[in-house]
Image 1 (cartoon, rainbow, N blue to C red):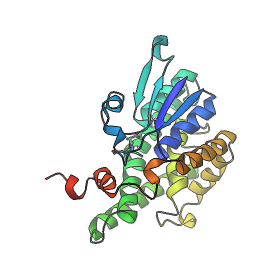
Image 2: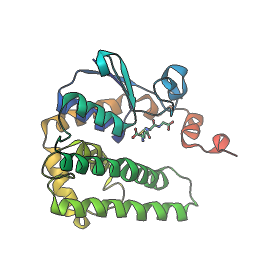
Image 3: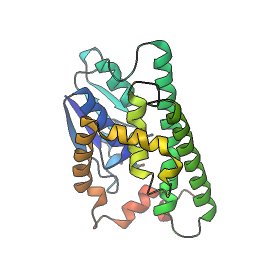
Image 4: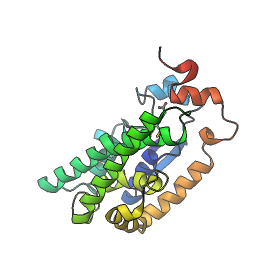
Length: 237
Ligand SMILES: N[C@@H](CCC(=O)N[C@@H](CS)C(=O)NCC(=O)O)C(=O)O
């Protein structure tokens, strides 16, 4: 059994998709990041960065309990455990790792910042908003160019690189003010992945996670939101 700690988030959806694709048994636990549950000692013991997702595999490495944080590391762990979704052939394996790392280093951080300045920042951040829109556009363009010449990100096989990237591209492309006409190959790939039974099931599970996420409740604490975003009294002096 694998315990998954998470919330409504593309980084968490990645893990649900991988678990569903691999048919691994898991149990989901909400972490309320507005209430600050990520800073409780029991959670910090699982992830020193105080972020979700985290998994605890009770039959992990050597059969012992094993904890993994960082969504990219979790995807590698699950794929290695099951012997699927990461090719063994050296070239295909390295291609998978490169595109997975591109997601972790570029897609997540850049889309996350673009989202923040587009939806959550107070007015008066034109420089940052424009910078992250430009950088996000560059990432979408890069994915589109790759998918013009390759069925999936790492080649002809569906891998953890696709699982890592799909939730971000599918959830945010339109919300980020991008136009599908500019990214037809990305759209073809999104449509292809959206048909996978494990993805359909995972999105339904994620919709339920979203509906029950305490961090999204209308009565959530404004102070907790300030702490999450590092602003107001929580801004570092
Ligand atoms: N690089 C991390 C990013 C994880 C992340 O940013 N998690 C957010 C939710 S999507 C979080 O836990 N935020 C709480 C906080 O920063 O206090 C990963 O890929 O796992």
